Image 1: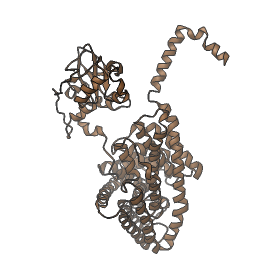
Image 2: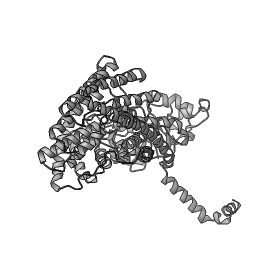
Image 3: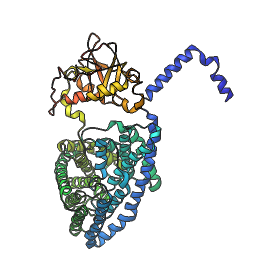
Image 4: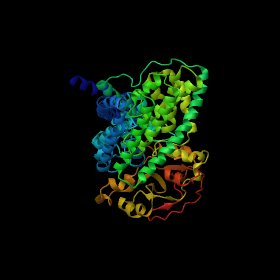
Length: 604
């Protein structure tokens, strides 16, 4: 240590060139780690490990202890199907009715709603009860799989860990990122497919875009969760098998046609499901009764299929064994079509009545059965597994508005990488023709899409010309009693002797103790970083600048002579465009005069 100290204190490190380049290195490192990447290197693995452990427990409980035993009973004693579903859904209804704050809020829907409306905040008071309700729903034979509790479990864990790990530099907006990286970890673990988990978490909140900001934490958490589960349960691909190793050029055209057909079927199903789900929510009977009805109807679907086609295939439960059968076994087309239809109807009753899970695997299976039937009956080809994979990807892309997830999932979980190109074509066609219909009622269009027609509009058309500003010598108390109380704005420019020096937000009132309001000057508390733009700047570019990570809340429009011409915020842009996306000019904006300062122009 003394040797190192003597080197650091030597004249070598005091040389002007060394000091100069030390500053440059510090600036480069600050720019390189401007997004606080390092915090995710610690936080995301914790989310991944916690999620991996919980999902490993759920996977083992359902796929090893409960469902295989119950499936054998159902297949050998068909009369047990309806009573088994009755009991399972009765337990689910009782749990959700008496142990959940809102029995209609759970699984993937709760995660998406929390992302959009609650800043990633999940009420974890009923966390274990909801996971138990998922076990009774899926384990008893409900037409659903493990992705629902896995996505919910991971998201809730991420949201809860945010409250415990804030000391590591986490900010309020990071809670949404931890919610999504937990959901990605859950998806990655349950399907043993880390890339699928990452892509699904990014696609899940929006119908038409990605939640780009969640990429890094989702990447880390997914890999760690996958590693945790395979350490405990093994790394064998969930649906792995050896299938078609190539495809002909004509297969791509047939894949597109299949995608279009399945996209239309998916559109009809998702619209029907949302209508039925809305009816069940509004129906004024106890939640338990709804679940019992759904369970009985699901059981009847399974009983009907088992009576028509005796064998090992049945449209109930997590159905992972059915995925392998559809991909690897040349089943009769009539059986495949009946399976797809009854699987969708069973899913409608299982989840539409309030069952706790999601329909990722049911949609996957229905698409696979339709694709295999298409290959055998229409194309008369032996490569039915290729079109089964295309059907799987197409139904997921159309039903969940997640085309990238669909293709990655099929390739990653089946081991059939030759499926990627045909599946991509089918998924794209299904996604396009299905429009905005989605199985998730809480998925949204990205905000920017509502204003896709404003490209080419200069910012001078929407900026504020009448500017309410604050004088730098004013105290925080004067700011609070005059400007902040008189104007419905979150941020204001700060000027000193006709010169703009920074911005001040209403948020400083919560950061500065009330007893110091009369002493602290606004000029001392303001943010002196200013972002300037030209009046001709495109509004879409301005919107991107205002919504990027760590962006400023206000941009300043500078005229050609260097003077302040106006200001613009996200609110200005959103309020300046009508619902049809057309601009309404803001040549003048009337603002209540301020006791401190109100001026149309300021010197820079």
